[in-house]
Amino acid sequence: MKPIVRSMGWIGAALAAACVLLTASAAYAAPLKALGRLEGSRENALVGYGVVVGLSGTGDSARSLVTRQSLSNVYSRFGVTVSPEDINSRNAAVVMVVASLPASAHVGDRISVTVSSTGDARSLAGGTLLMTPLMGPDRRAYAVAQGPLLAGGYSIDQDQNTSRRNYPTTARIEDGATVETAVSANVLGADGALRFLLKDPSFTTAVRIAESINTRFGEPIAVADGADSVRIRFAAGRDQLASFVAGIETLNVEPDQVPRVVVNERTGTVVAGGDVRISSVVIAQGDIRVTISSETSVSQPALVSGVLPRVASVPVTNTEITVEEGDKDVVATFPSSTVADLARGLSDAHVSTRRIIAILQAMRAAGALHAEIIVQ
Image (cartoon, rainbow, N blue to C red):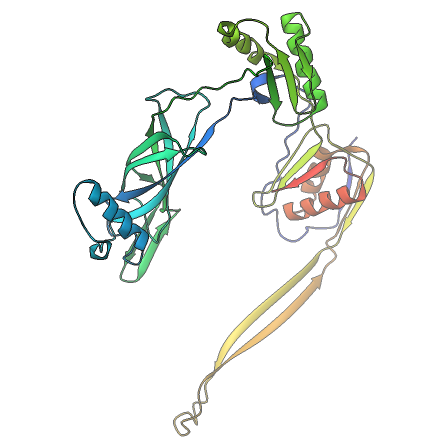
């Protein structure tokens, strides 16, 4: 049903950002691997502490005791004894190195790392990370990182002038770490079953996954334990586990769609499912604009400033506040329809994205919008 919109003029300025509404007219079947993961198959966080050298005067200053002590320790490993007090250079910086170890990795595999300064370094561009062990939560070294850094920005200081772009104190090393300890995902539980964990918990989706697996293998081997997991019985030998999991991952399941509206005020984006509906509602919003302008001038007593030594110039600020309540209002009537019709109608009436977001929130509070609103 087409909404009825009566526009009495433009509301404020033109749209600050485009309002985009994505709709899904029909449900679709998604690959099972896109809906969740098997328990035991996950990435592992790694972290390490290291030193970056080769910086062109943009490293940590001499005030950083940690940097001087770290360089002294590095020198001592090569038989050079240098006191931390004797180190005075801005060509090095102490950093923290983080990486993600895949669920399964072999010795010699390469992974990427992110390097971030922990001192007062101005930039890590052009630096080289010295050999840094990367440890897991069990404080065991799983990889070793080393290599030249690639920073996505720069920071240049010259004659008290600074030019900076992005965040030069964080850099990347693609494939900069070598795995030293092999890891393997153990997806098979002690009870001889696998557990599939859903990304978005839903009883409907869990039941559909179990039914799809049972249909695929022709026997009731899967059961939904709850809204977030499905237990799958595995009776064959471990040598057949890979082919069994591959047969599960290739299944396509239609996920349950949760009524949800996501709005982003910064980009002016409104995203909603095509089946998100609204009840009959009338929207009226006035146009109130508040303008505050300030003008600062200097009172210069030119006639007496040279005669009386205590007379000085005084800055004076004049502030003017103007409130406009115009007649450029919009009154819109929407019968039972979808969020797509609502956003389209408000956009045709030149309602700004910020006001569309406010209208959606007000409708949700009034019970006319039957969906969850997520504001980013």
